[in-house]
Length: 175
Length: 442
Figure 1: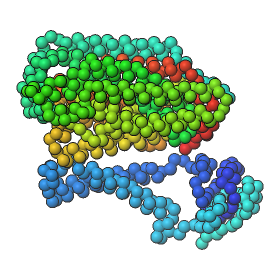
Figure 2: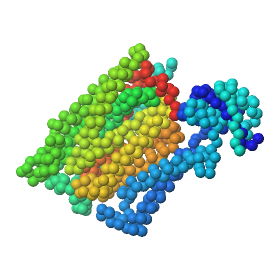
Figure 3: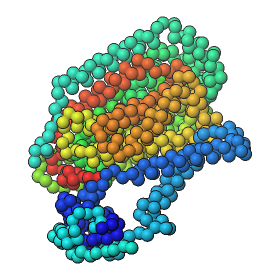
Figure 4: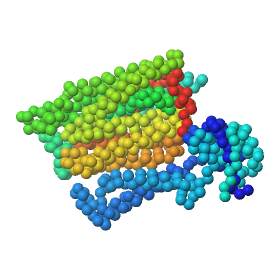
């Protein structure tokens, strides 16, 4: 079976139940694609076995780009391209540049993180986000399991999900 | 539960090490004093410096510089003694800060009903035991060295017939006069100590009483009152003890600036003791999650300090009003303070900002230890830079005397903290938020 096409979706009623279910399902050797929840569940990333997020690195690089770009631009503009006397200071004087640099760092890091979020969660214009069950934005907790990535067959996993507390188990196929 | 019976033992080995630290400090201080006494040599140097740095001298405190030259006849304190007073004052202000931050940290935790810190709350409580000693030292050093430390204490400044009459300082007489100044100092320390003993008594009463929240509620409300009082008193203390050294100069955010410096170094000191105790096998319930939060505190308030530092610097730099910019000209144009100025910025901002940025560096004992030591040393340097140029002028320096006095203070402070830490259970026994602290996870 091809990966990323056929999924089994367990629907849970309670955050604690899905937290424990995630642990026991993974203990059985089943690879969990993702867990969806209307709110943050404490400890779910450990239960899913997530390693350190790479998001901080992206954030740092974006911020660093902002710092260098701002310093370069303002130095070039006020120092070389169109020097202006402001307050009798040197053309290139670092202290007044710092607030702009700071703001630009924050701007690039913040907006860049929003864009990064869009890209990694398939919300980019050409992306097709997988919607497993819309009730996970309301009151249900969803565990999606990619059948193409697992050795166990559909019935086995379905049984496992029901045993660990899923109120219903649905199949979801994507083109 | 066995963890709640954990006790810190102030071993004879630890005592011996601290005693060595004290002795080394005293020896270094004596070496420093003797090398500074050095007969007329110092005076020659003084004269040379005076002529060679004429341009700086004008910048140095403006009219105050002239006063210093003229007022030379009024009081002739030896350079080494003046320097000793300045060093004592730097360390007094710095370690008073560490002590009061201990109480402030406890108060913040109670007022905000925090649970994450409960496991190591006995450490800041122990640090605040330095306060009574700090109060005595502060009064003593002020009374002994007031004329050398504080320009405004000279009476001829207020005498209209005197050639050194200073209308600016005379205008500040309503606030900067000896009775009011001493009164403020006594009231602040007195109130801090009252709050401290009130809170401390109830904290330790909890260990032997039945489980309940009555004590906790008492501490919480007194903590809230303390925080209100501290907000005002820390600011005024900063004007009194640090800003009034440069009597002509003023900065409206100076109170916050000193507070932020105290706060970061206090947090780093708590983190350092936590790390050292963890390494010795104590504090079993404090894990990397608690340390992570402490690290975030140090990291965050490092940036807060920088924010205040920069807010103060940028406005003065940009407006370029002589009476304001003189403060930075003193620190930026003289050979002995210029490096300190930049080192201060590097050690207190650039290094902790980059070093503590990653999650791992805040969660590991070794990295937190490095960061804490650097931040503590850095903020000591910050106080050095606030106090020395104003008191010592161009005669200031950094040598054995500074290191010696600091080691003596550090040894004494650690001794007081650790001996008080060993007197009670290391982990609060019946604390209402202890259970929550055990499950702290981030």
